[in-house]
Image 1 (cartoon, rainbow, N blue to C red):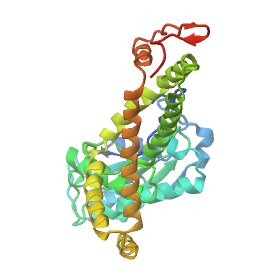
Image 2 (spheres, rainbow, N blue to C red):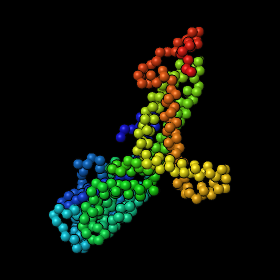
Image 3 (cartoon, rainbow, N blue to C red):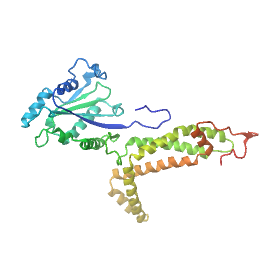
Image 4 (cartoon, helix red, strand yellow):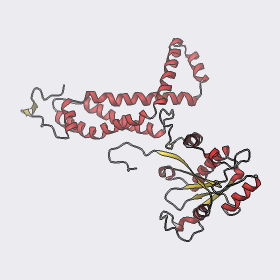
Length: 351
């Protein structure tokens, strides 16, 4: 993803990431060598910095080799296997690099412990062979390897990890779990993104910055006079070069969260009707507010304000002088404002 450009208000999204991989036979030894850093060199993975491997740590340390432990658990469960049976499933947990910036080791450990807590909600902790966090690559991540035994003792990776629909479910549930403690995280890519009803904090931050730009644009438009028309047009043009792309970007992002606006609009309409019926009865209003949860109220207010601020940001574009918009769309400078005796001619003044 490209770095933030000059004049941009975009904030890098921070995704919660969960991926699964299934292993059947000889490859189990290879992933063990990688995860447990038993190799002397990693020519195939230049991101590994062995000088930092001392910072790696385990949440679950393996008691024996991955393959040996998987066979032990499978035999103990009385499961039959074939040569193509999946014996180990690996879950990779991480987040966008920006999420880990500035975090202390204890904070990073807490994140991955929470991720493991999520997995053990659905998969028995006893099936985990190893859970190791790598700090010696570009982004901290956890390799959590487990034997795919079901709750009733069957070896069935397909039932646990499943098909595309089940993988989407895992991604969604992981995000729902982690966002409670880390609200800045967004859902990783999944098929169920459309209509999601959670708006991440970075969108509100971007809107705050966009609103400041809108206020500056308001000031420039309101301050146009016959004496400063030329300088104001130039200032408006310079601001538009940042403002218009930011409005378009915000429009694209808000479309992804249509579910939140639909739910909030309906709820706000109901609340407004109830408040209107109170006819200024402050005591009753306070009673109703206390009946609702603080979190719910704040969410509705923030979502409603976000939509309102976006509409303001978009509507101000209709007030831009035509000659300024012509400059912006053609990317050519307008003719200077000509004047007689240092005063603009009739027709050059912005009305």
